[in-house]
Amino acid sequence: MDTKILRNISYGVYLVSSNNEGVDAGCVINTLTQVTSEGPLVSISLNKENYTNEIIRKARKFVVAIINEKINPNIISTFGFTTSKETDKFKDYKYDVIDNIKVITEGVCGYLVCEVENIFDAKTHDIIIARVVDTKKYNDEKEMTYRYYHEVIKGKAPKKAPTYEEVEETKSKGKYKYVCDLCGYVIETDEELPDDFVCPLCGADRSHFTKV
Ligand SMILES: Cc1cc2nc3c(=O)[nH]c(=O)nc-3n(C[C@H](O)[C@H](O)[C@H](O)COP(=O)(O)O)c2cc1C
Image 1 (cartoon, rainbow, N blue to C red):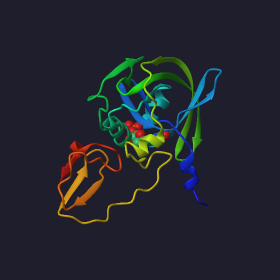
Image 2: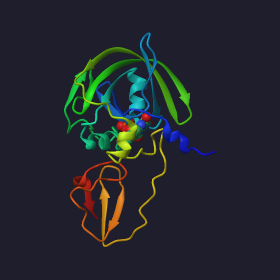
Image 3: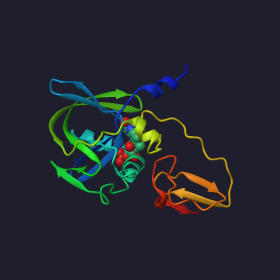
């Protein structure tokens, strides 16, 4: 079966976050869908190994912020390529607290506050159906599409994203070796990395590369 056609499915890019008994978690998702207008109900698909899933299952509540095109790409790298189990993902960015749940307020159009109604098993992922109980709109910036994330930010989906596709490893050998401290991507080159270099895996900027 040729799975290339799956790349033509369109999505947005979102930050989902939650809090259970004082523990924060949040990650990037592309799988938010409005399911019904009555409710209204939405669904998200979360990998069972993502810490955010564990926290949402316990808290039964989460907030989804709709990322806009002006977002600092480092926010996507932090929330999409590291785990809340080991990192305080919010510490370097502006956020608000809604019902104890931290929600990033920079680079987003607004947010939906959601209460979990059902959770369905989908092999590697859980499909979470939730009722939207409150909303806030911050601005009229353009919401980011998944295509924009790939084509403009030059980011990829990590292993735990439902849309993951294997990224070709750099086979090149070079005088210098750099590693991205966010996603672990390694690049070897004969030149110093230029200031405008962007990580081909997670979209992090040059400041996240360390020479090893
Ligand atoms: C563009 C993009 C889309 C993603 N979409 C999803 C998704 O829909 N569901 C999911 O479970 N993970 C998705 N991920 C992966 C999670 O954000 C990632 O595994 C994160 O590190 C999990 O963090 P946590 O352990 O703090 O929950 C996506 C990542 C990126 C960069």
